[in-house]
Amino acid sequence: MIYQVVDPSGGAHNATAVFVLNSSEVYATFDFTGLPVGPYSLRVAGQNTTLSHAFSVASSGAGQIQAIITGPQRARAGRSIILTVHYANTGGSDVSAPILFLQSPNGQFRLPGQQAWTPDSLPLVGINSTGPAGVLPPGAQGEIQVEFSQKTITALSQYSVALASPSNTVDWVGLKNSLQPQFHAGDSWNVLYSNFLAKVGTTYGQYEAVLAQDATYLGELGERVTDVRRLLSFEFQQADDFGAITRRYWLGAFGRGMPDPTGLIATNYSANEVAIFLLRPGSPIHAPSGWRLPWRAGRLWRANDSRRRLPTPREGRFARSFPLLRRAS
Image (cartoon, rainbow, N blue to C red):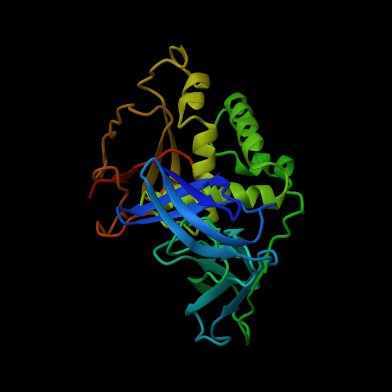
């Protein structure tokens, strides 16, 4: 279906984006730049359905994001506290879901359910919790809860939240090596990263818009994602054509891009655990003598607690899933 607005002179204008929440609720985005003010009608083209004088368009200011962070400043030694990040669009037009940088000179952050701490700074996306996740209309507001702990015990916990300036340049060249996953071949990474740069642009404003699009797409699938690292991982998966480029460049025992049953790399995970990287999806894994392979429907499990899930690649970088070999008891 085509959703349209009809301006005061009778001109019809199609929606630039449509988000179908359910069979009775649809969010449609329209670009009113350069259109006249006054009463507008809504129409579903081809359905003979029109809502006359549905709303009025008036001159207004640009969208404006405000963000604050609240929480206790004191905590018991060795304990974590819960912080709440509040954000809102206080302007007069839609804005992309903003990137929010949580910062602390003496602390570390993690989202609920995560095991690993992120020191110093944690980037989040302030999504829309009701409509398209990547768009904040005028008056929209939300909040994100984050766990915080001090790295070194001091009298007061110090933390803040900051917004990225849309015109500031992102140093993607300087970040290239640090973003490259372990064991990822350089030649395929060059191709993948070039695809990534062509999508995300050079400024924080362009980068923010891309993450907002990803947040909206994943929101349609039922995933409300506020973690920038998960959205960034999704971008790299797209830049990799969901593994097709990596597979094409992977040099195995039988040449580039060919199935290789030996395409595994092991690295120490802890004193009694070894992480196995599946460099070639579908490769079989054989546990050597004295080790066992605890694999449960693609999930990763702690050595002494089969009920607790280890962090998956989507919670960090986008390396392939890995199981753990453990010493047999």
